[in-house]
Length: 371
Image (tube, rainbow, N blue to C red):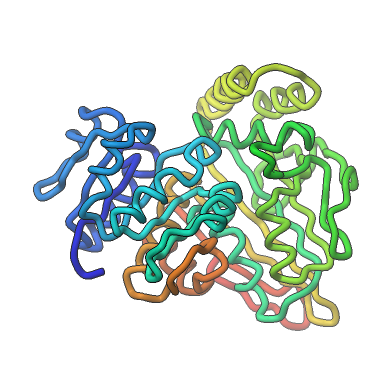
């Protein structure tokens, strides 16, 4: 792994350009920058960079991009359209693979037809959600089990794949199944080792620590959250998507009972989020509360000025681990193999706009973290 380019697909995008900048700062290279249009790549290009316009749907262009790379980092999406396509081409060209999204369907497809190379490494979901988020419970406690409640959300502009993922999280279970893969269920939670439907209700005008003003909370159990609950042997997992912006909250509530195409709903979400951020400083927060009696309750908070930059920082932290040889060969979700402490340390070091802290909610023993 000491030779060959590091290829970044979606290099000029909202996540990719952060990845490129931090890899340059790490003096990791050479870099090969890929994207659909040449002009944004040329604007990003520095001496020594190789730019390659590439459409992920074009076999020849994608093959040529991956050829000669030691690692291909995919920052393009959305994942439910890309699936395992880029990973397979990268493997065929002898390149390891890291995807900032790459969720369950991609993992299932790759698992059923793994590439022949025994030393190949693929890291999926190496972004903020679920990668970084799913590492936090192990950072809070070295013991499995317990009840975990997560609050995740904020106010920032949503576009493209991020908006589509949010829309999918609000739809009934049948609408969140793509290619026979279950993505998640609104209103569900994990209780006593199994999924429990319609166990949680949406809440309006709630006040939460780390979320300014009043917010709306929409419960949602994703496939990645369910995987976390199984791996950590949690008795209970309750995950709430938190929305601060008034227009986005109203739009999302309206979408929950409305039929229509995914593209129409995505456009509505994009417009609402754009209006909410006017005159507002964007933020995103994730708060984790872990109860493991008789041990004291533990809480962690991650607050960032950009979830996209935080996703990029997580991807670079994962790439650092891969380049150091800390990731074993094979197909992995990032949170299954990365070190929680090293990853969180790298994220804070990379992105000055992210703060991470934890403390014990016990009056007899209060241990403050960095937040």
